[in-house]
Image (cartoon, rainbow, N blue to C red; front, side, top):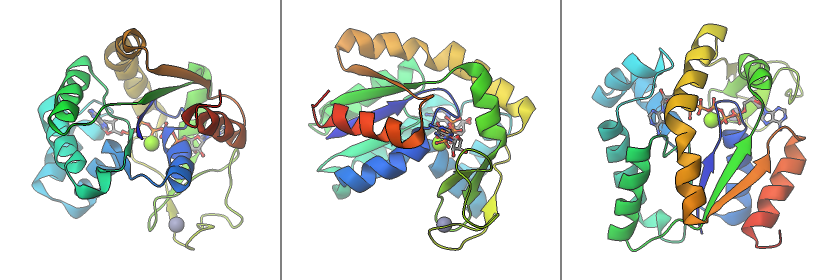
Amino acid sequence: MNIIFMGPPGAGKGTQAERIVDEFKVPHISTGDAFRLAMKQGTPLGVEAKKYVDQGLLVPDEITIGIVRERLSQPDCDTGFLLDGFPRTISQAEALDQIASELNKKIDHVINLSVDRNLLLARLTGRRICKSCGATYHILFNPPAQELVCDKCSGELYQRSDDTEEKVGTRLDEYINKTAPLLEYYRNQGILREVNGEQEINTVTAQISSLLRGLA
Ligand code: AP5
Ligand code: MG
Ligand code: ZN
């Protein structure tokens, strides 16, 4: 099954992806995670991506599309994949259609997590992430058992550099101007499904799971 998770920054794409890939046994492909890893390692890709990510701006399409093209060609994507945070522009969506057709694949479901803008700021500024395994927490909405320690691997939790109030504003503007128009693109293809991302984390997971299983 080939799935895309869409939604504004902080909608819960990563949180839900962690759970859904456990259930459906497909790789979780997050372009944001790929950029953060490259930035941490200081590779040429990371140095280039940092110029944009740190400002809350989208990384140019040709760079991002290249990463996804390479990733989707890996053998572990043969039985399916979950794209989180890609595509984010119409050009990326068109490129994805092209890549998929070259690889004899098609997108089965696009899940859009909708969350009101005023909730997103609280979600993003309170987010904490595990340095070792990447698990996502929230200081109020989804706290770890022990402060700043990952429940899953005991790794140390950190705050993303683009989770400040100022950067979040830029990221939301990028979303509205460049990514939101994609909803229409997938609605026209008849594969867009809406999920209310303001509900409790487990409720959202259950709804996505039912949709993917064809039960809702
Ligand atoms: P990326 O990493 O994709 O960031 P994003 O889209 O801004 O989304 P987030 O990861 O911030 O939010 P999320 O929806 O995953 O929410 P989460 O589950 O963590 O991209 C980062 C940057 O990389 C971009 O700005 C850009 O520069 C670059 N980039 C990436 N992809 C690109 C592309 N395709 N093209 C160009 N550039 C690209 O949840 C957020 C918080 O809320 C957490 O604390 C969580 O615990 C909490 N939470 C989640 N669900 C709930 C709930 N139901 N109730 C209460 N709290 C909840
Ligand atoms: Mg994420
Ligand atoms: Zn961890």
